[in-house]
Image (cartoon, rainbow, N blue to C red; front, side, top):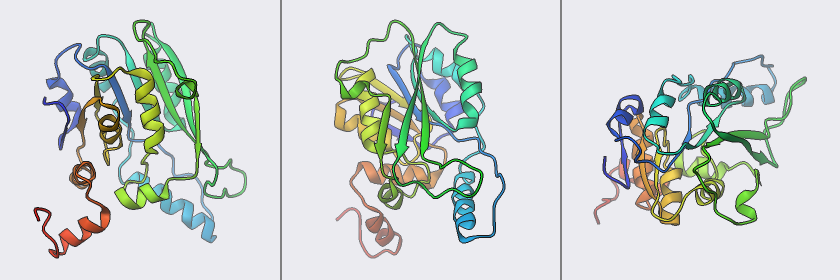
Length: 243
């Protein structure tokens, strides 16, 4: 596998080609496991249902067997995993078989979608962090914060057309905290390429896997500075990306 490259591949197979003990950090936003739940016929209920349907297009959870490969490719366990609330117990139980420290990190949203009756606001997303004792964290007061607050990142979703995209600044914070310059970061479910962009800005190397061709193309365009509008014009044949 070449560094600083995103591959349009199945991560379950591609990760087997990475040699043992060669990855310094795994940072990934795995396919979420969600429930459909109840819904009302109100306009709010329909909005919430649309959000869930968009996520379902890319999500049915993952096979946790891939975590064995996560362990194999690293000398020291150093892993960030964004996941749904439903996945937290299973993932914690899986990794706590090993001698690891763990944290539950959160992204809190100050303008979430309004909630219907009898449910909490969807204003938190969860990231599990696991590291073995051999992993040293970098100093920096703000790097060490376990929470990140912002508005929902609708502008990023519009630009990169991915329903679960995470804010670039929180991804940068995590990677900067847990790696040194020149480290190799693997994202097996790279989506629209946020991890890769963060690595470029932080002088880290990356390897990314994305099975969906549309998200792979968006990630490649993103790293080349191509916006959504330019992608749409390219589809219409109105501009050449080689001009």
